[in-house]
Length: 256
Image 1 (tube, rainbow, N blue to C red):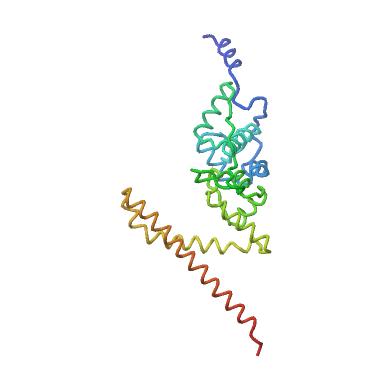
Image 2: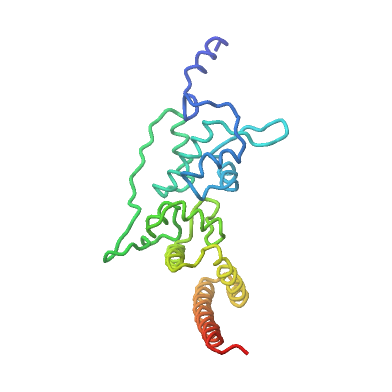
């Protein structure tokens, strides 16, 4: 094949998706986060690096080794985040979709229901252990800005893929109720810190049973951890009642 023919074939080959979008590497990773955070409040520098590790975006590198992104890179990242949020697609499927788009094919996205209701109450869909931010907002009746505020306060934390544990539905609902009662959410961080410390204590208790890696032992360890967690939660509730009673009692005592 002559060089002229090779050049003609190269010209006819489809450009990587998205096409007709500037590919000049002009944005830092921080600027990419700033460009996307309004639409995806849970986006972080770590998440973007994770998508690079998974081969879903390939930024350029400056002479000093810093990542530099183009507008086309931002569009690819946005596509990944939308697919995760709206279709619950795993990263492998999203990677296949991007390769299909790069090859010039159209990609059909199957619509997925985001909200499940039972007797008028919004509930977590069955078999869902994690939720994207949009679903968490839908299921709790709040907005993405509020969720981002809770993330910033350290009250809830997404994983590297931007998903929240399904239990965060209850956490967010309680946070919203407490805020409606006049509590400032930023003052509730010690509650989570205490929960994490208690979880560490429980984990130490059941770790020897879990380390045997037998199916029965693993299930018993999970059940034991759940039982201990309920007991610790009961203890916390009763101690809080005692403390409040003491405060109310001292408030009623005359000063000396």
